[in-house]
Image 1: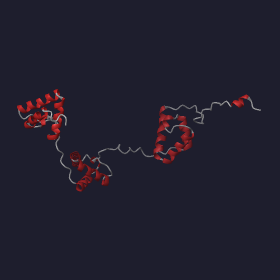
Image 2: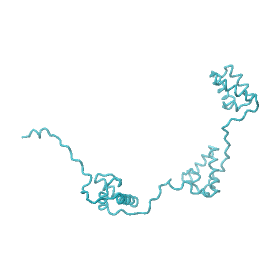
Image 3: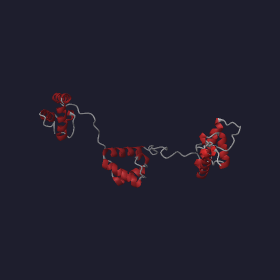
Image 4: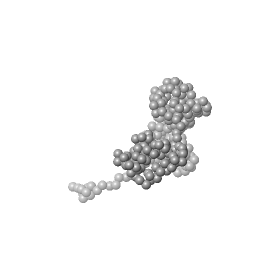
Length: 239
């Protein structure tokens, strides 16, 4: 015979898992002693892969996080008692990329050569690709010239050739050559502001005959005269 409760099979709430099977000692842990324990365990993990695995296994077995800073002091003491004393290896070595990024630049000749290679990359895409190829084949895929020794840079140039000279950049438009030139420049700008068809025609005319330079200050008086005449006819507006 079955009781009413047995037939219903009323589920009972599961007991929450115990995180740690050890009773918490009454001893209080100061912040300094807890920080020392945390640092000992972290250094132990860095010093020994075997001890690190024992620490991970202990954390997994007791349902806790692997970050020792998130455990209380008494828990860490229990872990150390079971895993053994953490080995204290040498001080932490900075990760790659944290070291001095330019260890050679104290040499003025080396710094000048680095600048020369950087200018060459800006001046020529083709030369920059040759530099990258040399870096992949002989420079450990390190593209920053400042990370290579002076001897390595000289060797690279003997293979890929001297970097081309960087052309000066001129972001500022040249000054008008005469009052007539200035007047024509202002006329073009006024027409562009007042007439969208003229603005479109001016842009297309410059693409076709002015090397794509749309700034009237970069063109001669004769060019602007001819462009205004053609653009006002609407010849380029709908092309």
